[in-house]
Image 1 (cartoon, rainbow, N blue to C red):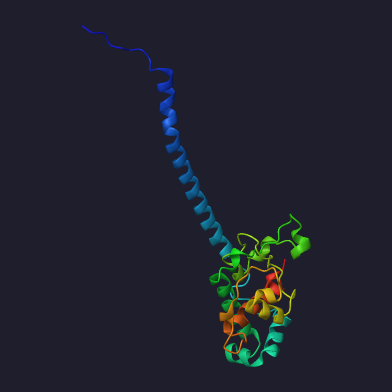
Image 2: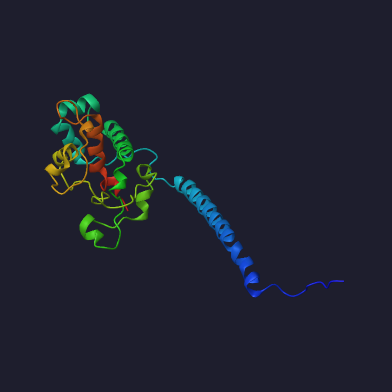
Length: 214
């Protein structure tokens, strides 16, 4: 009659079993962390929504550049936006921001001045949390990288004409620019259309008035 082998498993076999389970444990832990992050972000987003200071695009502090835009391009402005004022400014901001998102501008530009790397010297005051409490900053457009400059404090840095030339053919005003031309922001007469006027209005708003209130 044979005898039952009760000798322990070889050391390498006994150690291999928990090691084989390690990738599965790591995968489960990763998914758990992912779910937790998603839930926390969702809850934070909802709670922040209750604190938004401006439920509509801000129209209290209209940059001077918006009125100047109406003077510089009176016929296109009147045809596409009407008279310069709170209502036309609200429309321009909405269209401008939607265009900024749709064209993927946030891929190459950030809207976050950080307190490192000489950011304040290059782009202006460091971005602060209260700036996010504005409907124009939901969702946040912090950006991914800086192929081009940060735009958080863009308002007033350049003229409307500079922005028109820049969108039409970037190297004309920035010879080393790799930004593509946005000719569809202009009509057959090479004057800014509704999209062009609105994206310029949005650029001139970033960092002005309610865009930069502490």
